[in-house]
Length: 355
Image (tube, rainbow, N blue to C red; front, side, top):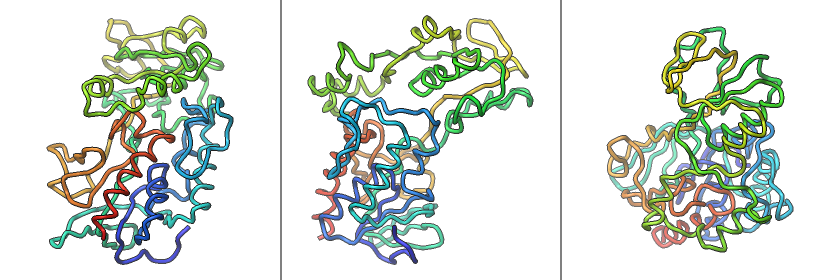
């Protein structure tokens, strides 16, 4: 990994050293441009290591390759999170990617001459072009009602959940029934009585329909190539899916009690949309993440809420790009095995502009 002070001027700065940033680095390394990747974690793959212990990908090893290096897992196996972290570390080392760790970017502005000025850790960096590869899971979102929970109720966001024995005994409510909420509820049901609060109903697809991985079907039907701008893409982008076991099966097979959405919180009690209420010892907020672009002060590249605007990763500000965001270009834009396609496209855009 890179040590010492940051380069004062770069052709390209990549912000974020997860799978998106590393895939971008792989393609930039083929161009001869001077670039650097900065990441706030203390190790490559650090964002993966901090997720819960039993987390598995819902894509099999067949679909987990970054460009240039196959993922070391059986084609039909579903890697755990530490396998992903190890793979990313190996990937950065194999291609000698210039990754600067422990470096948090706190501001990004565009100078009058068109270059970008970045505050990266203790350093100030100038770059002709910048790729924001910070990924879709940035700031854990917890509803404001959480503040009304009694102090003796143990509550945490799914980003802070690790394993069942790290939670106190007693009745658990998992709020949110997307992929993370369902996985955590299933694991906790082996050691705790669990309720699952289901807000918006999300379609569930089996992990292996008719014995084949769901992504093999999606690839065969070319659904993984549907673009965000297409009519079908616009419909799919607004519809998340649970891959694997959903709320119905959790209730029938694992004794998990389903609840409607949380309507209010009153001390130790949770009030639900159907008028029922119950008290819990533990609440896990599996309520997702929000995107934080507040550190980017490039007005022509952001919308009214301060979020980056982009089309296939290209923002309205020349030389500023995004990578690894959900539905950036296709359903797979934020996934391990597909992000390299978007990175290759951006590299083809970046290179002629630099030269």
